[in-house]
Image (cartoon, rainbow, N blue to C red):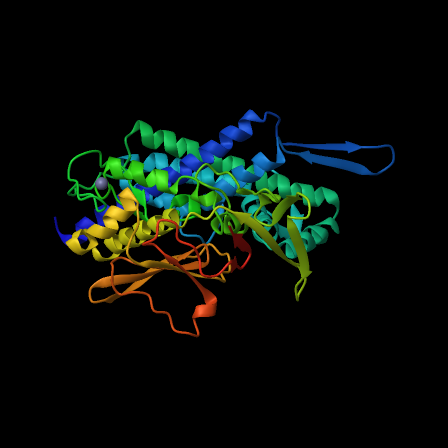
Length: 447
Ligand SMILES: [Zn+2]
């Protein structure tokens, strides 16, 4: 196969997986919404005289929010994987003989965008798609101060207008969900799937060539918000996948990730919004800009500080388990996986990585250190970059805005410059129970 065809086939396989994955997320959120019963309804009543009352209700506020956020991956314009992007991709994948069906689907999408109710705001006709975009940008994904301000602005036109906007927002989500189900069912019925790329099966974590290789593996765990960085089928065996799952299971509940997810995540792979439970405080995320706090006694410290330009900066001190080896193994696994993705699999099959492979899969200790920068600004940022010292990668991973450094070999040893020392914590992984040289970390407090 020519190189170009090869990479095109790989890209198709990758996109096919992403579409399906994003679809499954909404499906789960939609099922939870359905189980809540109730319906979306707008009631308008006129009392004696001229005043008109309106009431817009949704089945369940939280379930509706999670459903709409799962759908945002398809609905938000100007993101990489909008519904238009997917229809184009699937149309090409399906080929000429399905083009009539895709014409119908696209025509229906236009109707969904228009919507069934008329609304004019500031002399502008607001279609459902427009209402969706406005409410998503100005309220749902805006910061809380801007969100409140925009809803107040809408109220000037009357509460009924505000409710209409939400109704159109939801109606666009529901319409799009119906369309997606149609697309999904049609694709299933006619087997419109990207072909599996026929690649060698060699596990990058144990070098096995036999076993179950029919799955992708995320480099940085998906539960930490890495949606699109994953190794294709054929790179990780079933046994290693199981071992890695047990390292990564629940890591999203561990500090500092749990705290960062509270601010950055808009839903896990089931479309659920994150929550944080520590002995001192419970935090539940309600929407991209709403958190509910419950604190317990004096230990749970919650401070609100006004920040310039409005809004509040909240600093929280919570304590929790911090399993250094688990985190170091998870990061080393992500580092090795990323190198395999970028440089190709052969690059990581070299014997010089056998030690780190053993540490990742079997655990125990590793003769080097893990470095963590104490200050992180929670953000959805995910990155891995590295430089090599005598062939050994020193890898900097940015996970949810926190910076970690792992070295995939025994040498070089960490030797941070003096001016860096106050900003980092070092954990000696050659010890069974590594302890940080420093106690406190911004926003968190390890025990
Ligand atoms: Zn393996």
